[in-house]
Image 1 (cartoon, rainbow, N blue to C red):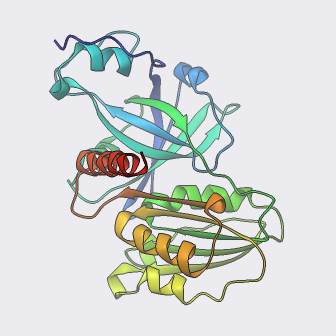
Image 2: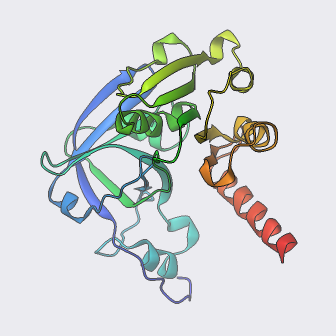
Length: 274
């Protein structure tokens, strides 16, 4: 066991799968609930996310399930695998919390788990966190993302006030991966099909920006996020405080590798600034 001081943290929320739904060929919704849902504390963000915890096979963990304690007392290979997911739906009255998982065959950890999940299975999570919600200062909104950002985009559209202009670009594999999106806003939604060779960055670059102040949400694969960060800040003059932008994942890297890369980039930036 590692000899480290325990970090204070909130015990994991322990839920049970209630039902599953195949939304598209590659998107699975898991609806969970149970007594443990009372410990879930929602926030006001439309990109509210949780860390879903997948215990290491054969490892017995302490009760309550506390990641701070586990990190302090267990070797790293015994730590649960963590994956970040947006809370797609939370209903305290119905006792339900829904998370949408992207599934691509046997790749990864979370997708295969979601494929095999059945009522009664345990779902452990920490959170939620979050940082974005549509604000009143903006005259119009820009929402850009891929499948990983689609739950947050859908929630943002549902929260949009009536009549507010919204321009939406969502990259998915093909038309079979499109989902119904509901909003009271004045939304123009464009689906970008990866299989057809359509280019998300080019589509955003070609957009005729409406007049007024824009608030933008751009999340998904790190490559297009990096390109659009430069475009929106340097070429379009989007205010930095009204731009929520983040690479959820990077093509060719595992989640752990991408987190380590981001941490290294942050440390380097802090060193340059210092």
